[in-house]
Image 1 (cartoon, rainbow over the protein chains, first blue to last red):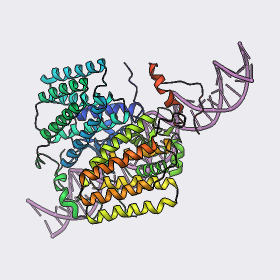
Image 2 (tube, chains in turn orange, brown, green, yellow; image 1 turned 90 degrees about the vertical axis):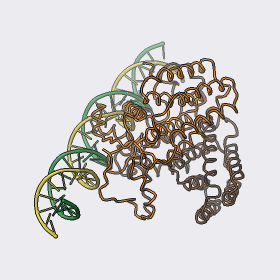
Image 3 (tube, rainbow over the protein chains, first blue to last red; image 1 turned 45 degrees about the vertical axis):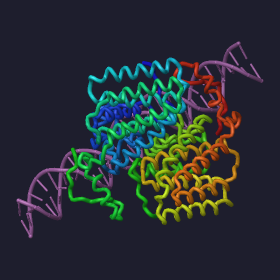
Length: 252
Length: 252
DNA sequence: GGCCATCAAACTGCATGCAATTGCGGCGCC
DNA sequence: GGCGCCGCAATTGCATGCAGTTTGATGGCC
């Protein structure tokens, strides 16, 4: 066990971060769909810890935007609205632009092979489930961010990439990952060549096309969370409690 | 009390978020300097809650990068290295660019007056302590972000702005806030006029100059955390425990 | 048949208690 | 006099317990 140790930032202790990692992964692989319930008891039992720890983990994930926490209510996997999804992609484009700008022409040989290896893995995973492909594609971007050795950038890129994953599972149709893989290869090549302008454009285009493939339209019906659809109509309500529908059947 | 209610994102419950807000404010006003210790007991006692809650709050702040948490050790206010500070400003420039791009020409009259009122407050605070000026200047940027009504953007801009505050208290000399105030006014004017290119340039320049005023040089001596200075030399160490100096007198 | 009140189970909010680890002051040794 | 070692106080890591809230189901009433 390489004991990568918990990176300085966040990831408080041990058990908590283990649970966080597990849940994060489950979420981005869509084992846990948006809206899925996450009761503290069940989590604690599943991971062999007390509710206290499970609760703490949920708090962390909420801070990352992967989980929604409302007072006295069961935590659920976040269900970003379409607008939030769009915003997340906008932010992501900016942040990853920063990443490639820092990296262009500065990669070592071993870093380049590491990236190529990763894309090879993505390639091999094409036969498998979509979930794994999506996870690997996301991890490619995180890997890139890590190479900047800027902890802040790593954290933000990771978070926002995870959020985009969530989005994908909400709004995206089964999508072809091939072009994404080719785009990854192109980005590596341009990074190695040190062509900053080119790599910026590639990354921008890559993320933009991912976003567009995912977020073709507000898809009000498939957005699947009734409350989001109704949200605009609730603006009139002045009270804190946003909307109070007579028992609306939520998922689950 | 306007009962602003806890915004959907993060900020779990009540007591926890109260503590978070209090600590955040104390940190950005430099009542708590970087490196200051934050024992769970003391926090709990001070805020009239149990350690459990104080601990949870520290976890949230750690997720935001304001607090550093290490296993079995007392939490301390984060002490960003010079490089991290620089990175934070880079990210901030990108994010706030996004903000003003979204806002240019889209502000309502009342929003514009709200912004002007805020800058007036900044102006009035010029006679007071530096701490308040810094806080108000930071809050101006957060106010701007809030007007995008993009929760994600608000969260990221807030976080990174707070981090930059931390930085300022670490590396900055007593600085003049006047030009910053004028720059704020200029940004509002350009936003109102809807001149996107102009406002982008203004914001970029504004943040860049703030960064440069603060981060003139690595200032190795004044960076004041011996451990950061030694960090590059510790890369050789393979163990998890990064560095083990014979009792080095840390602050406090 | 549909609607509302009532109640129990489920779940969260929080405090407290115990075990484990760390930090630090004093002691002995070189 | 300085350096390293040991033991105690301080502090964290975590589980459990109790109180308050929500959920949703059952039964009575219109």
